[in-house]
Amino acid sequence: MFPPLLTKHIIHPLRRVTSRWHRDRHSIYLDLERSQRYPLDRLIELQVAKLRKLLTDAAANVPYYTKLIKETGLDPETADHSDLLKLPPLTKSVVRENFGDLTNRRFKKDDLKKKSSGGSTGEPVHVLQTMESKLFNSALAYRNNLWTGWCPGALHYKVWGAWKDLTKAESSVKKRLFNHVYNFHTINAFTVTDEILEKMYNLFRRRPPTLLESYSNILGEFSGYIEANRLDPLNVAAVVSSAGSLYDHQRKAVQRTISPNVFNRYGCREFGSIAHECEAHEGMHINMERFIVEYHRQDETGLGEALVTDLENPAFPLVRYKIGDMARPLDTVCGCGRKLLSIESVEGRVTDVIITPDGTRVSGEFFPHLFKEFDGIIAGQVIQNSVDEIDLLLKTRKSFSAHDQETLVNTMEKYLGTSVKINVKHVDNIKITPTGKYRPVISNISPPGE
Ligand SMILES: [Zn+2]
Image (tube, rainbow, N blue to C red; front, side):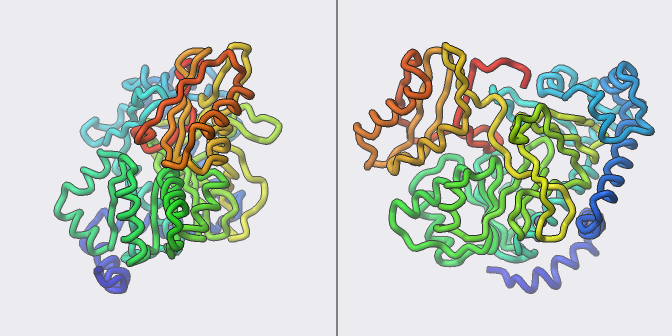
């Protein structure tokens, strides 16, 4: 292991002298360090100023918005949060169909980086971003990591499942060298096997990381593995769960087996880290210096479709972008003293619903809670291809009996009705989306509009 104090006190500060990228990122970070302590009205003012700049630029240089802003009569120079409601939510299909018209003419294509995310049907959405936008995201990620107790140089593992990220991380010698100096390691868990879980367990047992970052589904499987094999709990200092929040029962299991200190992160490929839990563990603070989060068509519990506006990427403005998740705001002020607004929970995707022939809608959230009642189930997924037939994919342990399977199917029939045929398929792995999201339910018959 590279001496962490050497990295923290010498190498990390030195990089700001030798690299412009690090110098610029640090200056953004210093601003973010201050603004996270601003009173809420000052944060809102900051957002309004950025929103006006973004919309004014978009009206002049982004054909899609030139037309839309004209049609709605919105005045970009005086717009505030309430004016946003005049613009329709931006769906992924609109982004796909208007890629050229959403690109800001002020920028040279060659200066922009393309990012792609998986849609629910697997069809990717492409967006462009500037280098400044990347820097800002990196500074936000740095701030969010500091909230967990991590510091540069501290042992940091990222257990990841996207091929692209991993091959990129491993490709450059310079990057590998700095990963070594920063004690940053990645583990490929594209398919989660017992061998990988065993390797992770032994590794973290020998040398517990300060920070373990992983997809929620992998953390769920890892804690299940530790409990099923009756292994001693690990002593990881902090765990960050990304790509989908941990369900309550999973979070408790992770706390018992991996680390008591669990942080949810809400993010996606198009935006990076939108919201992140702090050390007070009361919901996830929105990174308000960059993102406006709205809750569209809220139900009586406050749960609504998350619409996200990115204030720091003028090259490809995403305003009221319908990200495809359901989220609920938190009304209380966090105990940490930061006034950044918080999201209480993110609860699965808008389209993650099973619809039965009689029109009954069963929420995707139902299934993970049902699966956890069976010790023998490691992971499960429900795929609906037609209204009267679903595939139930199960990754199980040897202890999962025929009787368990019968009980499971009977319980599902109680909720779905017997007119829905359930095909049980035992699989070695439950696929996650290209961006790492585990989806308990995939409906291929949901209405479009995502
Ligand atoms: Zn807080």
